Amino acid sequence: MPQQPGAVLAQELKQSQKLSLQQTRSLDILQLPLLDIRQRITQELEHNPVLEVLEDNAELSLDEIVQVENETDDYFDDVSDAGYAGLLTGDTSSFIEGAPAHPETLRDSLLWQMRLSVFENDVRTAGEALIQNLDNDGFNIIP
Image (cartoon, rainbow, N blue to C red; front, side, top):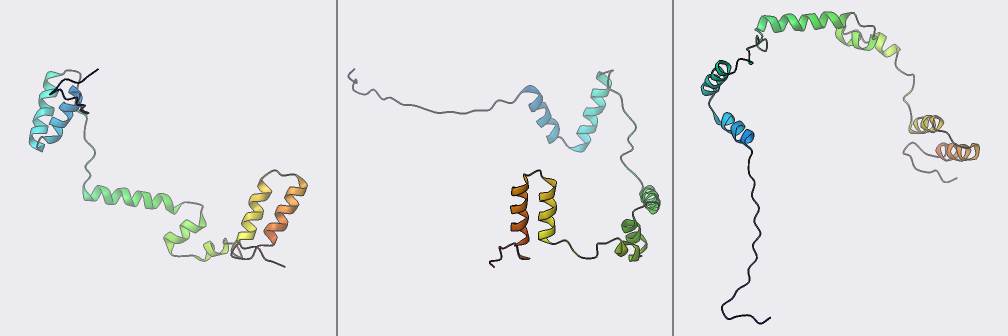
């Protein structure tokens, strides 16, 4: 089909986003100052009989905060974990007594993980031999 003189073919790509009514109302509320928000809440409470105001316990005085902290400290004084209780009292001797005699090595950890898995006997033997042949950095020791 031949083109006519002066005819131009153009293509345009356009993307737009339309907000729902709820989104626009939410944005309007977010932009309001605190005093206006309180007035808006009061108006909504008056117009909607289903809404009610619950007692706000979110704010605590400084004395109440100290009391809550003391109650939690008392609760943790009675724990049976010697490590945590020792940290609270400053006495770490019982915590150290429960610590392992030597730190776990990479070899110990790998052997433990392998023993948790199910393998055939020849695969397990080969795996244990390979793990036993690792140095402390995890590299294979060449005999």
